Each structure stands twice: as C-alpha cells, then as structure tokens.
Length: 190
Image 1 (cartoon, helix red, strand yellow):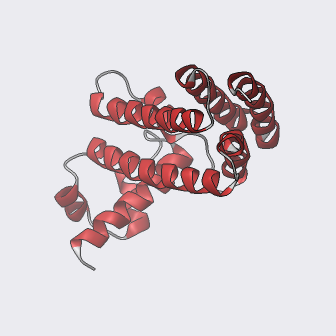
Image 2 (cartoon, rainbow, N blue to C red):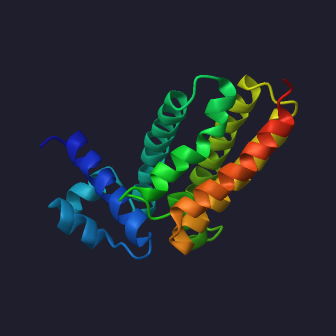
C-alpha cells in the first residue's frame, strides 16, 4: 500500500473513532491497532495527534457538506422547498448508524483555546455551513438572507445536539423543521 492510501486510511479511521468516542477517548494506539499501520508511518504523515485531528476534521467537512448539499438539492424542486428540506436531510443523518453528534461541537468542547488549529477548523466548518444556508436563503428570495441563515444555523445546531443527547432524532429534526418552515414563510415574499 502506498503512503497516500495509508494516510487516507488513518484519516478515515480517525473520523470513525473520533466521532464515536471523542478525541480524548481515542488514542493513537487504538487507531494504529485498527488500521494495522505502524506508529512510524503515522508520524511520517502527521507530526502529532493534533495534526491528525485537523486532517480528520478537514476531510469530514468536505464529505459532510457535499452529502448535505447533494441531499438538499435532490429534496426539492424550488429554492424554497430545498431550504425547507434541510431538516428532512438532517433527520436522515440523525437516524444513520454513523451519527454520534457533531464532530465539531465535540472538538470545541474537548479542546481549550490552546488548541487553536482545531478550533479554527471547527469555526471554518460552521461558517461554511452557515454560508450554505445563506445561499439557499438568497435563492429562495428571503428578505433578510443573513438573518434567516443565522436562524437556520442555530436550529440546525440545536437539533443536532438534541438528537444526540435526547436520542429522539425524529422529534429533534421535525421540531426544528416546523420552526424553520415558519421562519422561512415569514421571510419569503410571494
């Protein structure tokens, strides 16, 4: 196996384990044992666990947002329907076997300001997600797309945490959808 594929294997396993068990709850030795990759090879690719965490968060960012955007695009014929479908797509995510909450919320909760790179990656992801909600709001003709994006982002975060903590993913998604639909309808001029 070449170095690129081993690096990707490390990132993939890190995403899986960090999302399930957290960052402090997942040791490098566990990642190595589950991938069969040596510590030397790991450190050829990543100088530290923090670098592996940053790489995993960056990789997951691209994957998740691509999945979200594809699902939302295919969920509605009009811009308003796509905007309203965000929480239907969120419900799919909440009900998936790979849902253990938000990796970025977990990271910010586990790492202090000293781990600036990790927190920067988390902030960048959240800003990109909000920007996507703003783009959908603009496309739908929202009167205040920035305000609507902020509201939807807040609902999305709240629904994600509620689905994780309460173990009631349908309730979390559908409640957020109901509130979002009302906010959207108030913003869209017919």
